[in-house]
Length: 595
Image (cartoon, one colour):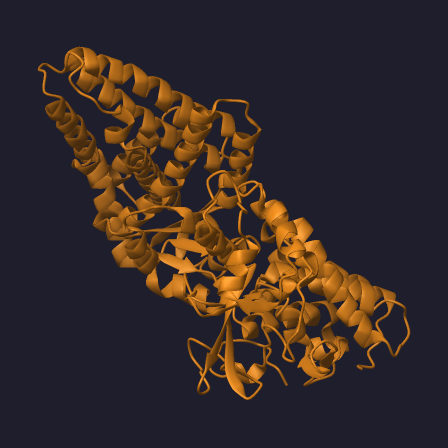
């Protein structure tokens, strides 16, 4: 065991360093961001490729990436605006995207039926296409807001003169109108709902003025008008303003950045609101469809803006919850995922660097020169008493109980600080306390992080976990045995098929696949030697494989859930075992590496 015995002041500094698990409230990160921020592969991908959508689970560092991007690019961007989706007014969103849509769609269909003498049998909402309307509304809202920021910045910098300045001033005022621009979120939302309302009004006007009886002609006319509205050339003032801004961008490497964060918090709150309503099933389904349309439209709009030549000076970074994205039925999802998304996946080495930076920041010169901060305060290795008393690297012991998210790392370290480092004396049972702390924190993460994240969308999840516990499942078992164990189970009214249940549990990180290879793998499938075999453990968070299951594979439960489901371990190897030699430790721009 290590000999480090912290005093109360040092314990307090360590506790403070890991206290805030959300980047938006993390004062330590904001104050020391140049020292604490880890430039992950995804950070460089956002910087290099200009991709707009950051996909990640809760606690995976989406907000922190936006903070770091804004900070380290402050000289590059002349204007940065951070939009907090969590502040979007739910009541207003309900009015515009549900009540308005359903009520007015019904009225318009009635009008259309009168025009065509009841000949047209269709649902107006189908050809209105809520997803496309949402995409158009988001796209124009972001472009108008970006143009507003660009005009305002150039004017305030005093770098425009004469007619150019007059044009930018007119466009700025036209976009602002009567809206309040002191609150970025409220301003963007006002632009968004205004655009959506304009589209509905256009549809109403088209139907009211339509002469004829051909339903298909009416649909075609409405569709063409909507598309034409968003593909039309901008008014002359706007066109001139875009040319002026583009000239500044080209001559001065001048850009505007808009970040859009915490959509997952907003989405979950609204989803919870749906579940609490006492409306009929049809209206509840409509609520969910509208909410999905808002998300799909947001994703499509970012791709459209990225490919718009007149707005190549505007950068967007939008954080989207990974599990929600995986649920979407976008026809363009494969293309969008490849071209426009950055899946946020931390490597073990990046997480190790993340932990070490915070420990070093808290203890400063206390750590001897050349000594790794993690190993200075925690033991080098931990004994796995279940699997042949094998020795594991202490950080990797913690890491294999997580889903490779910095938030979970912080929670485990906080628990270790409070339980292992307190007492003020050296004691021989630190190793057993270390194991107990990890075990306790695993249970707390399930209750405080995992269940709140998924129980809204999957209200029967807890019941399913209890069913697995009653089935006396094993930590590693054949896929066929697992499918038998979930027989008759469901996650919600919609998710009852066993294959779909397996897929959702995989996305949630509950289960993965244990694969056996003939020889050592390095790149896509890092392996560890177990029972003289090269083995990999594939979970959703450490793989790009969205469906790793084949008929004869072994399903492995994640160690985070072992106690929760009472998984029985009958093997002589460590499930989800990690070793540093599985990973490339060279060529990374990281401050701390294992030693």
